[in-house]
Amino acid sequence: MKRNIVIVEIVSTGFNYVEDVLARGYQPVVVEALYPGTEEDRAPFLEAQEIARQRLPEGTPCIRANKDYNVILEQVRKYNPIIVVAGSEFGVELATHLGSDLGLPSNPWSIISKMTRKNEMQQALADYGIRSIRGRVVHSVEEAEAFYKELNTTNTVIKRVRGAGTLGVHLCDGYDELMEAVRKELANSASDEHVGDILMQERIIGKEYIVNTVSCAGKHRLVSMGFYDKLHMNGSNIYNYMETVTRLGVGESAIVRYAYDVLDAIGIQYGPVHGEFMVDEKGPVLIEINCRPMGAGQTRQFLEKIYGQHETDSALDSYLDPVKFEQERLKPYRPPRKGIIKWFILPNDVTLESAPVLQLVRQLPSYCFGVFERLGREPFLTCTRDLETTGGAVYLVHDDERVVQEDCAFLHMLEMQYPEMLFNQIRTARPPHASRIPLEELMQEADCHGSTLVFSDTKTEFPGAVVVNSKGLSSAYDCYNNLLLDLTCPETFADTESIIQQIFMFLGKACEGGRVLVPKSTYCHLPYGATGMEILLRTRGLRIEAPVAGRGRMLIASV
Image (cartoon, rainbow, N blue to C red; front, side):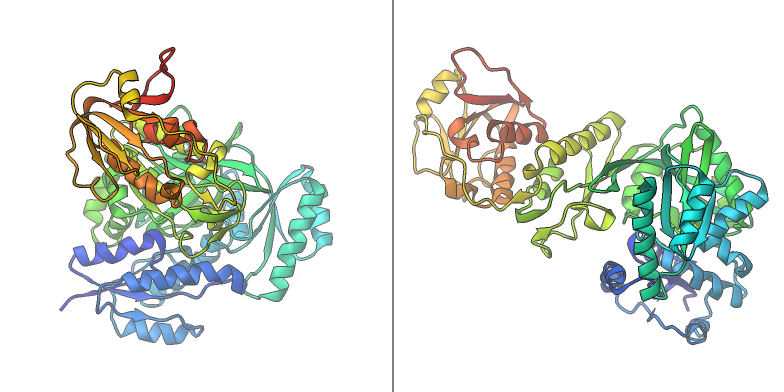
């Protein structure tokens, strides 16, 4: 008979626990947690919870959320679990409570406030004698005004004492922004008891790092490290990307040492901790810890490619296999590959016509997978202000870290300068089309020799070339010396995403050293015209050739 492992909440990366438990020959038992906040706050989390539940293997026991802790305790007790783990931030308190009451290896219930309340985390650091952030729980505008004077800085942060992600977080510059944020969060707290207390802190400005650890009987192991890049726009600090640290740079070992001190100050004994730290001229300081695996929906396959292990599996070692945990703890930190999570920023509101981003990202050499949950369910996409309003995310990994960084920079350039190449806005008018140049003139001008494939939306024949339409494209031979893109009908471009998918398929038909010819009569229909076409050529990895004087009626690219 299989022994049971209880997982409290399986949204995001925490779902990896389910697969890891099964891989070790145990039975996962899922417990769903209650979510705090207003009804609007809870909506995305409840949706994620439902999606995760539908992904569970058939027959997996699932205990639904219940406000009565004793009911949950007795339901869990019947499964006689060997450990209880938290899969997400909202499962930490319940998992710790269950583990403590059932006498299982876990963090002591006595430190739960330090683990979950951001003000008490900081107080624990101060009591331990390491750097902390000045802050105070405020219950009124008057208390916030008084502490603002005491802090003697214009840079402040308002956040909920309990919260996840960017929920309820306000980065404030000056008195007016602070007061606006205080009033908003105090109103939310008054209308919904689950919002809880409001914390006001000094704002530390620097570079934000992530340090993920697992612990076994009070010994700590670094499992992954990275840093965030964020942009201040649309009235918020927006996530641009998260990049992994594969080799520690100057000063970065101090962040890891400080992270270990934080774990000791809090009293962490078992399991994973996701720590977020700000580094300024004074060194590292804790923003907050979350006693669960890092989020962002990272699959175990993605993590294994980057780090050579994945956090939930390593966390299970801390409970189930102390010998293996100690062996891994003493090994050098040597991630084999660079990884980046790139969140897509929508600079403005978009009434979505199509999403070329779905086709474009798949062509990048570092592409691993993408998540675009808003697409298809929300035709009107509001501009990005937080993680919930991004256009989606793409997960990049490659043996050559420069490839990952270049792909990320390329995507960021597109979203800022050419957003319609990613998220196509409904247009009231199409760009004017250009006159079609006879194919023989184009081929003579480009001095074409050898085999030639023409992709056309016009009924045409050309001696010495193979002409296909969209129906014959997929079955066409895949090793041509010349490719000529002859798409001239505006109707062909009615669905930008669809035609870009076909163009990428067409570009794959060229042999090594082959060329691609694109006349103005084709690229004029794309967003941004010639530039839009060059974006597609670059995405596919083709080399855009410099125009030759007197032969400028088309774009030419080489494989």
